[in-house]
Image (tube, rainbow, N blue to C red):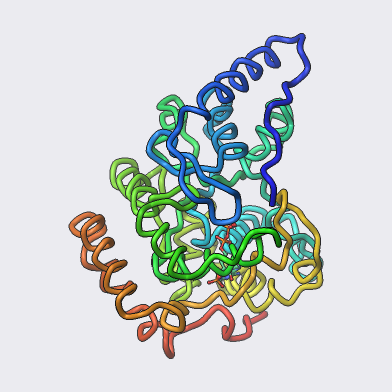
Amino acid sequence: MAASSFTSLPNEGDQESQGYQTTYKRCNDIIPTLPRDTGWWLSNLCQYQGFWLSSSHAILGLMLVQDHFMSKPTDIILATSPKCGTTWLRALIFATINRTSYDFATHPLLTNNPQALVPFLEGHIRVNDSTSFLESLPSPRFLSTHIPYSLFPDSMKTSGPKFVYVCRNPKDVLVSKWKFAEKMRPKEMPPLSLQDAFELFCNGVSHYGPFWDHVLSYWKASLETPETVLFLIYEDMKREPLVQVKRLAEFLGKPFSPEEEREGVVQEIVRLCSFKNLSTLEVNKSIISTEYFVQNPYFFRKGEVGDWENHLTPEMVARLDQITKEKLEGILCDKWKVRIDLSREENDGEQSTDQLPTPRSE
Ligand code: PAP
């Protein structure tokens, strides 16, 4: 995939466009000065404000968000490091907050990829050359982002949007990302070996990496302001989806009523958004790009906990675990470390999103 040009400026004239032009220009000036390293499917990544980003897309998007995005107290922002569960949480949050608007038999998630229903903040702010699209969205706006919490302006953190963050075992993230890169790499680039992907990942050189710093930025925020940042874990979501979706609904100020619980609404949402259901829908099997260069099927591979065991060597596992231990121990506590180590065993025989009991209808 060739990096598209970001040099075309928005129309001159109104004040907003001029503000955008200033940011575009600043971005153009800064990018040649940044440290560079190997890209996973673009030719390179640049390090900006401590994180590795694709120059033409992510850095410009980030700068536009930092300079121009006006958040609202009612906004809901799904934040993820890539491959940690963005697609799944987009679907779950969309289904949860809109549960009284749609019938499960004709639900928009049956005919739309979750990316199409939830705007990507730093993508839309860039593509539309104006905040007007984002401004026009009905309240509550539900957006997704890969921007680390520490890079959002303070004004945004205090203005009250609710952030939902989901993280995932870094060993599964690495494998998922490497498999994704296989599909995304243009034919003229040689394949990216797992060993090379592993080295890049360990060195923090992956989209919005270092992975561990991304996790830490939201972990700390969730401790400081738990009312505005909810920290979820992919492995917990797989192990006990009903519990986690109820937690999510409460955090978003839309708890399930006893009647909804009796009617099996939580089960319906979990079933609708399960990997098994979403990945087999025609829309998600079809080659349609909803998010720039990414085809719908690329967002669905296995959706499992512990696939790393099929790919990583014992040496790779030991090094990744060591980095995780150094970076996250005492902060994410032993709980998460243990969860990483035992993720596959813990998942065996537990309630799974794909094997839920049929909801009771009364
Ligand atoms: P993104 O950040 O690039 O949008 P994201 O959706 O976070 O990607 O991650 C894709 C991963 O989530 C894939 O994992 P895998 O490679 O290990 O299989 C994908 O299969 C998984 N995934 C997608 N939808 C679901 C779902 N409904 N439930 C569980 N996992 C899912």
